[in-house]
Image (cartoon, rainbow, N blue to C red; front, side):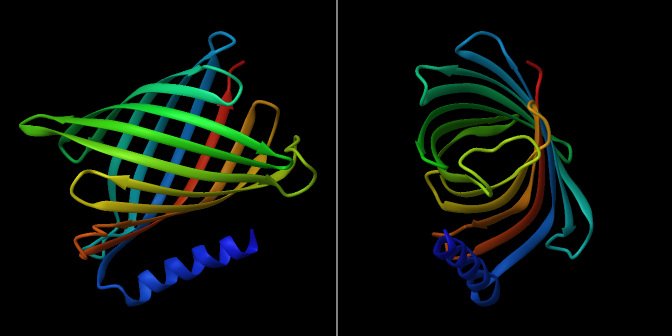
Length: 217
């Protein structure tokens, strides 16, 4: 775990310091509300905004708002499929995104390992439909004991690859989580994004993320 954390820090610093790139930073607050519809179906809705502290023009600005709705279907204890829709408002543009996820989870004593394979389709007025694939890998570990109990912290480390059939993007996400109540938890952390990787015109984004998860069941 310590080796992985050191690798993430070294990777981020090397790209920020040595790559010829653009750099943005800002806030990504998000709220996620879920409701169990049956033993195997969960309805998940979220609201997320993006605000630049420092954009390409060295200005403070609001970037976008995402509203999403997902139906998650469990096939067994470790596997599930998600089918969802995101409505994005960016400046004067409206972007529609439809996506499909395949998720599978492994529990190794106190460490939970999760994988997600995703396919996305983007629709926008007067623009050609675009497609993207994603793969995300996350590790979650309680900071005390073998499971996360109420009023306890946990660590979540993630790495995601995104490919839109023209270029590759990489995301690294170290989070610190806290289980507030049985149905509420909150995560704080960084969302580092490296874009235009293949084209060698690197775009660096560093977001300060806060996510609040609420279960209505």
